[in-house]
Amino acid sequence: TVLGEFKATWYSSKEAPTHRKFKKWLTQIMLYSKALNINVARLYVLFVNDDYAPPHPTLLAWELRFTDKELQEEWDIVMRNSYEEGLFDGKTESQ
Image 1 (cartoon, one colour):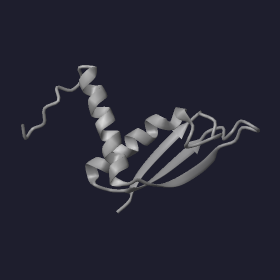
Image 2 (cartoon, one colour):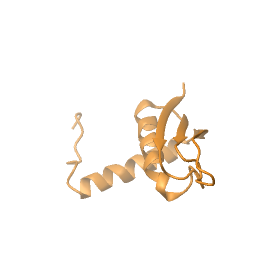
Image 3 (cartoon, helix red, strand yellow):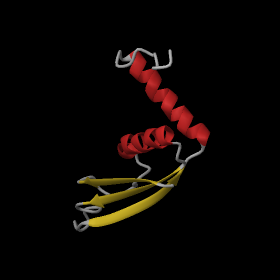
């Protein structure tokens, strides 16, 4: 099983998907992967203007592989931040 995520953006494709501006996408994918117990994801991105040199639409794709530890660490970071921001009370349905 592979998770699929599709995006369209005006961002430049330079340094995708490792540049920090794409971090929110990777976090989203990692949280979905954790929740679904899937360690492989494919990210498809339509860059409307590619790298702007010259501007033209370009579709790029990556296969991303995560360890259980990476997914758990990302999950823990988001849950801790949510709790600290008052968005989450720290309780689960089983508590």
